[in-house]
Image (cartoon, rainbow, N blue to C red; front, side):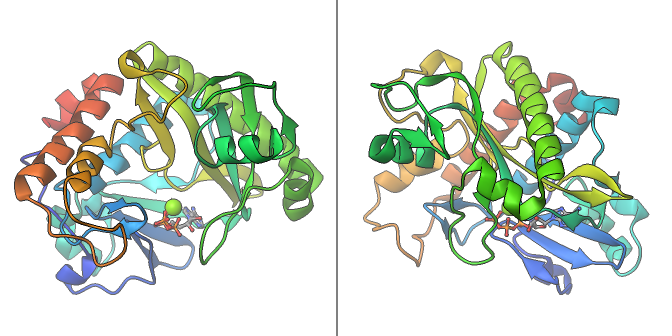
Length: 302
Ligand SMILES: Nc1ncnc2c1ncn2[C@@H]1O[C@H](COP(=O)(O)OP(=O)(O)OP(=O)(O)O)[C@@H](O)[C@H]1O
Ligand SMILES: [Mg+2]
């Protein structure tokens, strides 16, 4: 991604975000939020010291491509994604912010994670092995790790400000957001997941599961946050998929393989990363994006 300059933090630009996630930084502009995706990357929940050049731009462009894919079927938070159209002081940094920003309507957020799973992986598999169920969905006996589910299931989680999100049952989720909103969130989540899953499958990519966030904008349910990126979803290569074992995720596999060869115990501080590996990780993101949205990669000349 030769035409995107790496950005590890907006503090490099002299800006002060109101909120810093592991990857994104958020500026509260009153009615609107400015979301900036940096090039930070985490592995095993530890944020690395070095940026993966262009990763934040890739994540942002993937989100925008999915919004486009859904078109009018989707009410979402985006106002625009043009760094040249930002107010001061951001406009002065239009070049550095290019491709990696979204200006969005601030939503009244529903405090659940709307997770849809098509395959039994991660915390879903862990819950299944200990209880035979995931978020209250009893599943057939004898399912193996990463096996495809008979049909997708909705497995909400709490949105914890600190620490890990916790899986909850559908009725607990309905208590948090209200029965009417819950029904709408669930229906929309299935629709979005199934549509994306089928689109990706034709391009050799399995979207094993994904997490959406919703809120209310102008009195209507709206999709917020990043959408169907490798950070919010499990992307697997269909060619390499084999149930019964852990699958390599298409995005972090190169980094994890490299880290496995270092004497590092997966606790902070992270080890120093070889720049050549960071380039390869960056190329990996471009190739995922190219598989899903080749025309956009062409248009951006990545
Ligand atoms: N339109 C919106 N209105 C209100 N809140 C939003 C909107 N879009 C995204 N958000 C919130 O902004 C935050 C995005 O932050 P980010 O994803 O960087 O951090 P995080 O989810 O807390 O941590 P992580 O780094 O683990 O993803 C989330 O809390 C999300 O719910
Ligand atoms: Mg997040």
